[in-house]
Length: 382
Ligand SMILES: *Cc1c(COP(=O)(O)O)cnc(C)c1O
Ligand code: SF4
Image (cartoon, rainbow, N blue to C red; front, side, top):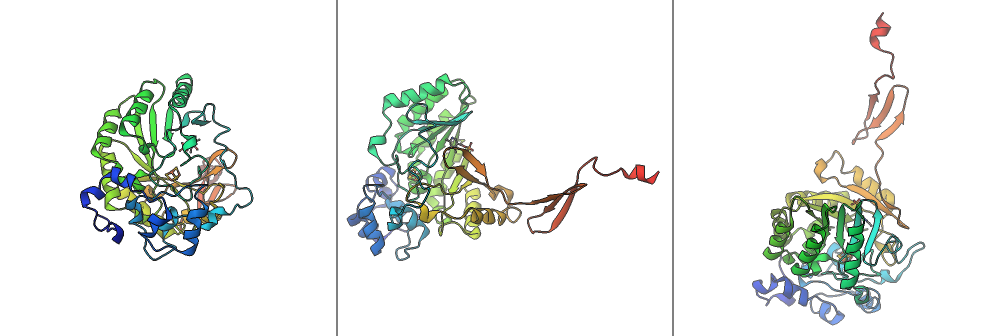
């Protein structure tokens, strides 16, 4: 088990491992946080100054991963507010991906023909400081009423092109296992829905949430009519703890394939070695690195954004150098709701009369000859 901060030394193991306790004991105030960590002036000021924009909540478990002294700790920067969140850079928006504009009914974004994204709840175990959906997430007034959820399900029912429903939020594991089961039952009853994708960060911020009851429920919903996939969100190798490993084992055991979507964050995971370490750990935990997401142009997260070229350079450091299983796609979600596009390092150098010139992963030149472009050798020989 991950060693705990001094403030939690007296908590019995069984209590610490209880997700309900972790959930209830989330640290949400400056006073409570100061009992666990020594804060910087910036953090202290930021907790008050950002409270009404995007509240703070961190599970004791996630706090136990924070370096007690280092203000640049990659775990700490994901969880604890900084004054940089108050800055707004040119072009940044409240809803950078125009998710509301592509929302045919409240609680649903339908951007691509065959899949729709359902906002099941506005709650998360932890509020990540870099969250793209700050405008909704953690805001109780944006919670989806049952009637709205029913409207969203109606839209899915009426739209046979939707084969896949991404259950997002917030974090759907903030719902009770029973509510989640109801939602999966509702999807399972729609003949054209083949896949339910559960997008959750609980494996990272509250892995205890994946208890036997949840795993049993998911196993029971894994059928030939509806496959349940889990999309998770590890950003740093430090997050791959024993507890997280156990949670992934339980989920994998329930039959769900698990994919990781990492958000590229400046100073946190923008070094090639960090991503290699993370992805190798994830593969051992039976989690496939799926996407590296370029940070969106959302308000108040400019300090986390990296230049596009940095992500492409990072990716170049993966392909060929490590197992292909550890190489995800780097994607940019186009501002204004254009959808995701891949950002790919250039390996194709130029076209020539016979075919194409490439540089391999080491930068060495190779030529590919297309069929039919060169006069046949037999003909020349005659
Ligand atoms: C990212 C996203 C999806 C899923 O995209 P994939 O490329 O299939 O993973 C679906 N809908 C919306 C609105 C999204 O932002
Ligand atoms: S878990 Fe996801 S939705 Fe919730 S705050 Fe973190 S990034 Fe945002």
